Length: 139
Image 1: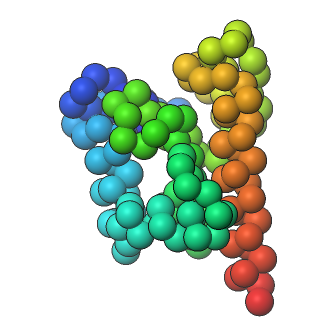
Image 2: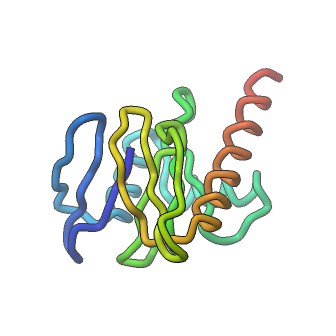
């Protein structure tokens, strides 16, 4: 559901009802996940950039048969970057100008240090990527 930086060396991973610490940064987890499913982070990023015509903070397709698409909350290279799974989001709510609550499909909530508009834009971009890929699979 989400990968959240815990400190400069490890991450807190939200997976269904579980939360656990992984001794990698969110970016390293993204790289490992892409490789696990047969690609590289850079390859996935370049593919998404090409499909969307976007240059920065592009969503990434971790695994395409299950539409596992995640998006970054900031620059992926920032130590503050969180990664959120598009298809697990139930809703998102504005807390204040700098924070948004994301509620996942299992009612787990996290607060991200991003404006509502930023999260809305990232969800829109990731949804567009999802839609384009679904249409291409039907051709």
